[in-house]
Length: 145
Image (cartoon, rainbow, N blue to C red; front, top):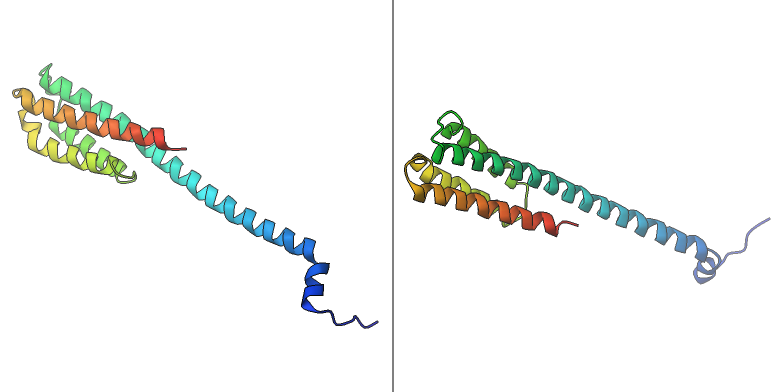
């Protein structure tokens, strides 16, 4: 039996449910892909931010040991450089202002690490940069959904 030639509007009318189902399926797939990408980006930012916060705490502890307790073994500047550079690397995965504050921390550490143990201004500058980086990282964490 030969099927009659149907016009395009007639074919659309007959297959309307199938076409609507196709549109819904494609849009659902698109949304799911977009949402998964957003979730993954937030997960990566969250992980990097938590790691940066841990390293910031360790760096602050090192500064306290070096400056206030005069403990050279627990306040080794080379270890401080390792913390600062790790914080900068982790913060490079984060959006501004966390990235900028980590760069400022590296600069501040480079300018003031030699004054730790003898110069309160140096200790205050480094602790201020640590606090600024910590605050910007916490603001970022609160903004993630």
